[in-house]
Image 1 (tube, rainbow, N blue to C red):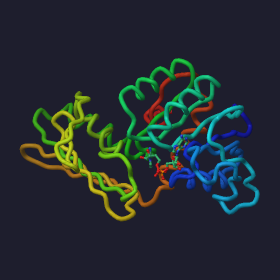
Image 2 (cartoon, rainbow, N blue to C red; image 1 turned 90 degrees about the horizontal axis):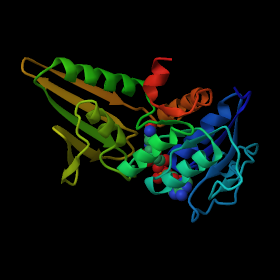
Image 3 (cartoon, helix red, strand yellow; image 1 turned 45 degrees about the horizontal axis):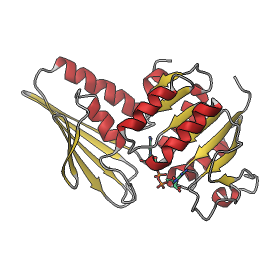
Image 4 (cartoon, helix red, strand yellow; image 1 turned 180 degrees about the horizontal axis):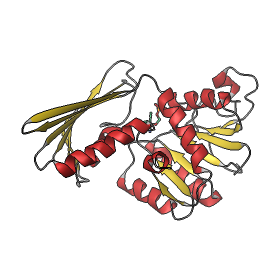
Length: 257
Ligand code: NAD
C-alpha cells in the first residue's frame, strides 16, 4: 500500500470536484496530482489554489491526462468525458473510482471491461446507507410476491441527467429490466418500477421509495444533507480501492470488508 495516495480529480471544476478538493486537503496521507476539466474551461492552466483558496494547492488544472502518474483517479465529471477517463485509467493501470452518472450501456460495458485490467469502483451514490437500502429492497422483492414500488427523486436544478443514477440503481434492486422508458418529461419506468424526477432549488439529493404490499406499506426516504456525503464516500472508496487487485467492485465490497 502506498504511504501517501496520489489522486487525480476528474471533473475538478464542478460542484463535486470542488468539494473533493476541499475534503482531500483535510485528509492525511493524500496528495492531489492534478485536476482535470473540459478543454474550454477558463481555469485550465491554473493551479488548484484557484478553487480551494489555499495557496498550498499548487497542482495544475489540466484538460487531459497526458503524462500524469497517480495511484487513483476520482471521477465526478460528465458522461461525455467518461470514456477518456476510463481509457486513461486502463492504459496507465490506475485504479478508478467514479460517481459520474448518465452513462450509457456501452459505458457500463466499458467499466466492466476495465475491471479485467484495473480495480474499478463505480457507484451512482457514494452513501453506504443507500447501498444498504438497495440491499433491503432486494430482500423486499424476494419475499413479497405482490408489491408495487414507486421511486421519487429530487435534485438541484443544475443536474443534467434524469432520472438520477441513484433512482435507477434503486429500481434495479427491484426489477430485472434494463429498459428505461420515458413516459413524460419527469416520469420514467424501469420495467414495472415507476420513477418520478423533481428538480428543485439546490436540493443535494433526496430519494423516496414507496413500497405497497397487499396488507401493509413501507416508505423509505434518504435525504443527503450536502454533497460532502458523496465526496467523503468517494475518498474512503479510493483509499480502499488502491489496496485491491484488479476487478469490478461496488459499495457492497466495502460494506462487507
Ligand atoms: P457539474 O456539472 O457541476 O460538474 C461536472 C464537471 O465535469 C464540470 O466541472 C465540467 O467542466 C467537467 N467536465 C466536462 N467535461 C470534462 C472533461 N472532458 N474532462 C473532465 N471534466 C470534464 O456536476 P457535479 O454536480 O459536480 O456532478 C458530476 C457528476 O457526478 C454528475 O454525473 C453527477 O450526477 C454525479 N454525482 C454523483 C454522485 C455519487 O454519489 N455518485 C453524487 C453527486 C453527483
